[in-house]
Length: 368
Ligand SMILES: NC(=O)c1ccc[n+]([C@@H]2O[C@H](COP(=O)([O-])OP(=O)(O)OC[C@H]3O[C@@H](n4cnc5c(N)ncnc54)[C@H](O)[C@@H]3O)[C@@H](O)[C@H]2O)c1
Image (cartoon, rainbow, N blue to C red; front, side, top):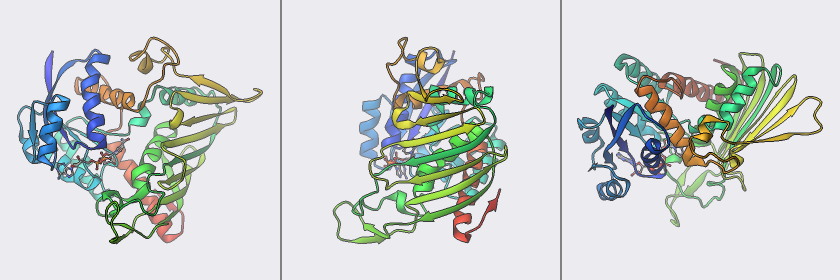
């Protein structure tokens, strides 16, 4: 069994989630390679040192290029703000290293295209952090749809709402800078668009409306200085799938009461399936003629669940989805699978988000 050196860039929310997944994956699954936590980088070198020691990485770097140049690193995991995905992934691909990049892939379709072309030329494995698709209940939802259980699919109603920017006093962050991110659509909507494509395939036309509700926010927490906001707080879109199904997609980071409401209802000629990430161990299924919805609960009959627990109803959580995503990635690196979102698929998500922005700006349908 060979060894795979992991290099992780970023120690924020996602940096920790990746570190947990890389640490846990070999305890949960039989892997074709042994993982070595080779290096951790962060612009804050003291934090890099601290987290490397706490999370079990052999070395810390304050300069991400040094992590990419590190011969002990075979796979580069990128968990930095969105505008840094492009330079970091391009450098890693130039060095011939596999890349696991957080979503969304980039801040423009042009960047995403270059990243996809560089990945293709390098011939390495790439994956993007659309972790919600790795939920065993989502895998089951796809199996139910593909088996025809719901009949012909006619409708997808999707929403990803949170409320972390609901208060006008929520401060400016890199997520509010159009050069660095792209608003609620890029932050949350990208997950929903990736999910819609995963479950129902290509979307060929969109019509949309985007809105900035709070036009100024404090420059930092508690500051009296105000910064203008030029990204969307909420986006609503109509979708036409290539299959003929119709749909909706909404994303908002200011919908009070919602913390991780990635949800959808998919209905077909024979039934309806509903999911909400805030209850990620459940699906609700209605078959035509039933007296009401039945609740399907995650359990060890689903392989992704069984890997963690032999007992039904004991519940997986967000970090387990990340572990499942990393498992797919390691299997692909070992030549044993193709699951997960690669740069080519993530580029399609970027095209879709760009089409939604264009449709909103020009107030018309946009065909992809
Ligand atoms: N898949 C998911 O469910 C999910 C959830 C949250 C965030 N994300 C994505 O993860 C990425 C990071 O988001 P986050 O919430 O972890 O952000 P964050 O602000 O919590 O963390 C960003 C990290 O990047 C580091 N960083 C910034 N500039 C750097 C540089 N030049 N060199 C090295 N390190 C640098 C920061 O110091 C920080 O540790 C984003 O792309 C975001 O969209 C994905």
